[in-house]
Length: 120
Length: 107
Image (cartoon, rainbow over all chains, first blue to last red; front, side, top):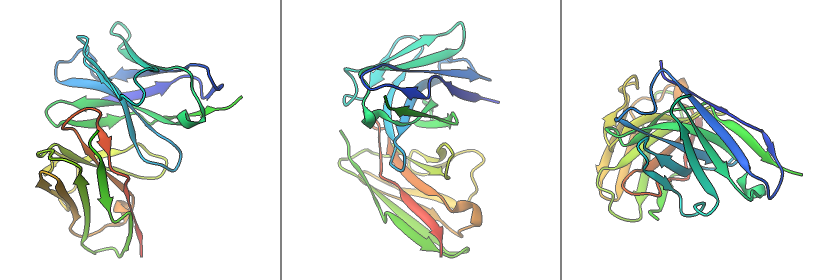
């Protein structure tokens, strides 16, 4: 059964770097049928797509975050990671990793999410 | 960016009611429209993909329709497990964008 699990610091100081890792079990992130990505949700608010990647190298970012965001992949650990620089209070959110199914053109499944707080 | 809107923003309904939620895209997105269900404290769950295809394991009381800019999610007979927030999402082009959500609660 496919599972995605986010991990990383839950508290980040303003202007510092937010780093999260998604560990995938039950499927390979090198599968040709899927992309993988990050989505976030500020408390009480809606969903914002951060970015997605294909294992072979194609990576897509939300232009609203593009100058601050990067997604990297560790195929040996079946993990992918998110880095967001120069964080502010506006970056506080639940961060989800998810599989993007090419055939369905949708995200399924999602990790349980991890709440990141930005505070000094 | 493609802007997604949803109506209503919230609704109250009885168990057994037929519920319809509308999603509108700011430009033609063909049938590249997905619907998700999110319960409090949980991750979103894919219900419908490419406008009208039911995701595996999702009850048949959920259905989707539409193309172009106007789409609908229908719950034919609302069940207690269906009280949640529903989001539409376009996958026509990046940046992928979501609607603001429709909260369905008990009347």
